Image (cartoon, rainbow, N blue to C red; front, side, top):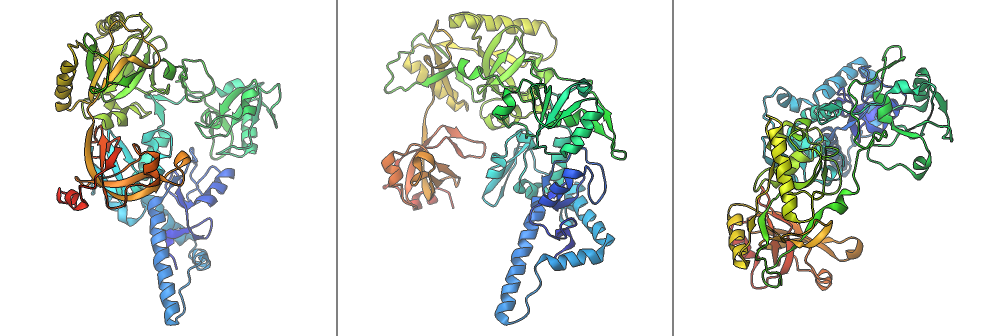
Length: 591
C-alpha cells in the first residue's frame, strides 16, 4: 500500500495534484476546492481559514510520482516473472484509511505540518537557506536569490504572473524545502500590502439600502453565503444585474479584465476579495461582523474598483533613443550633450499626483519613505539605478509590490523634466531646481539626483569616453541634441551608443518557431566557450531559418553584456563559423 502521506483523506486515494491549505494540511486539489466552496474550515483540523487560497505541494507531488514509477516497474517485473503484481490502485489505500481511522488522520497531520521528515532540519534552521546572490541548478533550471526575491528560470515561475515575490514553483520547493517555501508563501498571502499599507478595503457599511448583485463565478464562497452576508449588512440582493443595481461583485481573479457586459452597467464594481476583506465571519456562529479598515488607501485617480492602477498615457509620453553607429552615422556629435547610459529601469515621476510609473505605464510600488524625497509639482524622467553591473539586483527590488527596505539602495537618476520648458538645457535647469528645493525642505536622505552631462568634442571624444565607461563596467553613452524638445516615441534627437561584443558557441539543438516562424527555426540552443548554455533567437534571415546551422556546428553571436552569472544578454546570431570546430570551443575551457 502507499505511504500514509500520499493519501488524501477526502478522496480516500493516492493524490495526483496535492495542494496545501494555509494551515499546513495537504489534500487532492480538486477535492479540497470542492470542499471550500461550501466550507471555510480545514477538513482535518477544523481550523477557520481566513484565506482559502491553496499552495501546490510540489515536493510531495514529486515523491508520489517517484513512488508510482517505482511501483509500476515492480509490477512489470512481476508480470515478466509470472508473479502476482502488487496492488497499485487506490482501493487498497481507501481501505487502509478506513481501518486506520483517527490514527491515519494524525499521521496525515504530522506530515502536512512538517512537509515530510526530510525537511525537519530545514525548519529548525539546521540547514542554511540560500544566500543573497546565490544560484543553484535544479534539473535544467536555475534557482536564484537576488535582492531578497527567489526566482526560477522554469516556465511555471516565469509565466505565473503577479508580483515576483509572490511566485513559487516545485524547483524552489526542492531547493529550499517544501515547508520553508510554504511558510514563505503563507506569509506573502497573509501580509499582502503595498507601500507598507494594508490593501485597500471597501467600506461595507455603505451597503445598507443599496442593491447588490454577485456574478456566478465566485472563487471563495457560495452565492448563498454571499447573499446572506450582504443581507445582514442591509443590502438588497438581486439575482441579475439591472439598471437599478448599485454594486456588482465580480468573482474574477485580480488582473483579469471585466467582460463588456460588466463594463456597460453603470454600477460600482467590487472584486470578491474587497467584499470578503471588509467583513469578518465568526467561525462558530457564522454571523457576520462588520469591519471597516481605518487605513484606506485612496487611489490618485479616484477609482473605486479596487483594480490595479495604470496610466495608459505614460508609454506615449516617454522619449526613446535611436542607435548611433560610428561607421555609417551621418550625425556629427560635436556640441551634443553626452552622458553615461545607465543600466537600470526607466521611470516616470508624476509630482502632481506623486505617483511613480514604469515605461509601460504600470505603477512602481516604491515605499512611502522613499517617495517622500522626490519633489512635488513637477514631472521627471529618469532611471531607477543600483549601480554599474547591478541590473538584475535592481529589477528584483523595483518589481516587488511590498516596498522592501532594500529600496534604500535604489537611486532615481533624473535626466529630464519633460513638461517644464521647450529646450533641453532649460528643462535640465528646472529639474535641478526642483531637486535642490526638495533636498532643502527635508532632513532625510535623498534618493534622487541629477544625471551629469558633458559637451561632446566629436566622434573621437565619443569613442574614448565609451571605452572609459565600458572599462569601468558601464553600459554605454547617450547623446542628446542641444536645445531639443521633448517628444514622445523614438527621436533622432536622442541617440544611444554601445559597443557590440561577440563570441562563438556550439549549437546543441533547434527550437521550432511560433507565429510567423511556425514550422521552421525559432531559436538555437547553444553553449559558449565559458560553458554557459542559452538560446539565440534573433538575427537569422528567412533563408537561415529554413536551413539553420547544423547541430554541432559553431556560430558567432553578438551580445550587449554578461549577466551576473556570466550568461550573454540579448544574444544575436551573426554567422556560421566553418573555420572553427567544436573542439576549439571545448578546448577553451568548456567541458
